[in-house]
Length: 78
Image (cartoon, rainbow, N blue to C red; front, side, top):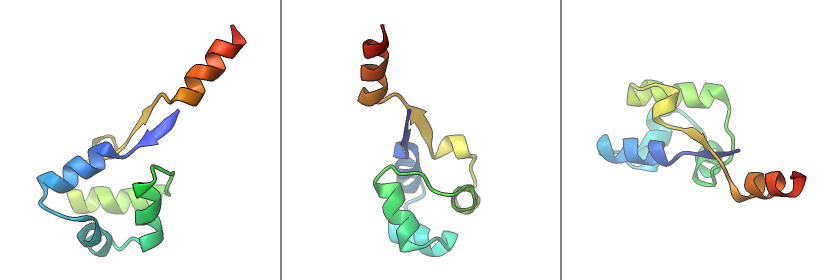
């Protein structure tokens, strides 16, 4: 499974906010923002800060999605 933050980017549009504004308001580092942009895992602490700023739940900003690697692994095992 892979992480998708597409919902987060949609939330930013809905809140008329850009990534830099989110970084400052949520008090997250540029490193965390870079990891989000690359769909890499970030700490729950960072996700909590983001959710607090956007006044939403974690499911509103991220989700797990199947990726090609998962699908290929399943095909190899059959």
